[in-house]
Amino acid sequence: MFRPALAAALALVTVAPAPAQDQNPVPLLKRVGALPGELVKAGRTDAEIADALFVITLGRLPKNTEKEQTVKFLSAAKDRAAAGRDLAWALVNTKEFFELHGLDKNPVEAQKIIAKFVEAWGKDDKKDKKDEKK
Image 1 (cartoon, helix red, strand yellow):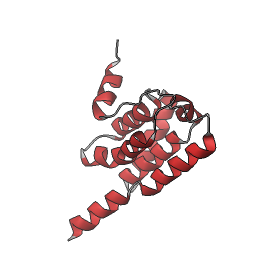
Image 2: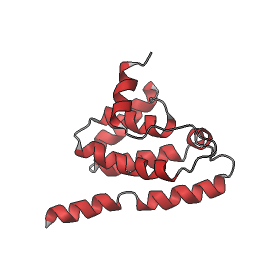
Image 3: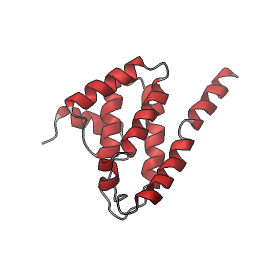
């Protein structure tokens, strides 16, 4: 049986993580990078952003202490989307993420893939902000 919070977090993400030992992580990384900006634009709370990022990256809700720290971090941020991307970066660099997505077999190569996408995260948001100013 799903806990209500898990069901709500799953409703926020359109691509749920699939523990796939041999799958390509590229589509997931693209989605993870875009998700914080989408959630902020949709008016989601810091708690909902935390839940969604944990679900999409680690396949679980944050533990109470993780959620408290994450919500505190997001609420203190001047740019919530950027803070969400920072949180996503932290989550995709965890041992738990690497093991869940089969990246622990070649961590050096996995880190190169992650670094490539993390570098691109936020560029669309910056582009959107420039377009809004015009």
